[in-house]
Length: 469
Image 1 (cartoon, rainbow, N blue to C red):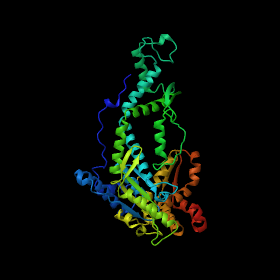
Image 2: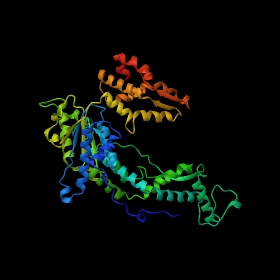
Image 3: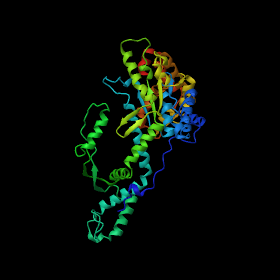
Image 4: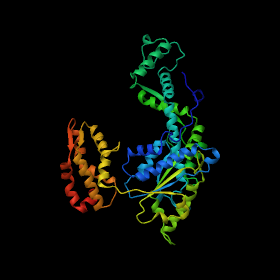
């Protein structure tokens, strides 16, 4: 059996942190494929992203002096704040996490401390790099896993009389080389997928243990597992399973062997430090009103003061090593219905130099949202019902009518932006979704008349629309 070890593979090139080919205009064009309108916000994040690439081209001494231009997005719910940040992270393969600022509490209170967001971001970075390396090593891991399956099928390849465990008649036995080659062909052709074999599987479960420490519960858990591997997993036991199932487990194990864990941690930390993005949602919920001397505003200000060193640059201890936050990009967002950005403490305001206001969505925007994006809701529902063999079609007047009803409900009740389209479409397609499994091969056309028939009475009854839509 030939197993390729990490040292036998060619050294991987350093990952490209920022997609070099994307100029600000190209970034905006990419965002336009998924998000309608909000050009000011798209421009702001595109410039921030390009500035990261520009910074990486500078000499090291000057590069460290340039801080990221953090952004505050101001706008009601459902207008695309989160989606802009999420799509931006996908464009650059950057570690990205979304966290609600209201989850944090001031140091000394029960709850999550602000440093936990950096530890979580590091976990995401490690998973991102591990997935990339696993994908790069997939072909080698598949070959190694194939050899291991053949070794199980042909337990003692060194004996001249070796034959597969499921070949009972000695007459069928062949020389070891020919037998192994024949089994390999059968394996590649999928003829042995249902054959059961016995493989060693590492046990993943371990007792839950909650210990509150300044570094967080997850940090102590990892240290305990390292100190007592016999108690916290690390054991393996033999299980019988189909070759089709066993192959994926063996491929995962072989891919893990090909990854240098120390290099993985270093690369992940570097990725987090240089290209990490933290999306702080509901930042307005921790903005206390000025001149507040008591009550919850005191705790809100405490959270802001805890956030300040993270945003302006500090070093956070994680289980993978120390992570500097100096060049992590922070994008904050909030509706700011009650509080204002000026209600944040001045020091924190200064760390978010770019502020963009997102527009409320209009009826015309809803029409575009249903038609233009690559992941438009109409396309999603068409694909979902297509799995049942039902062809779903939306006419142009139906799309216009859906947009009109969504805008109308947003005006009469709470304005939840584009999320209203989800509730409206779910209501319109409720009967069809229920009956679709009994309608294979049929074509259903949704027109304006159908939309009006389903929604007209609900829209008229304002109290009912508050609960149904």
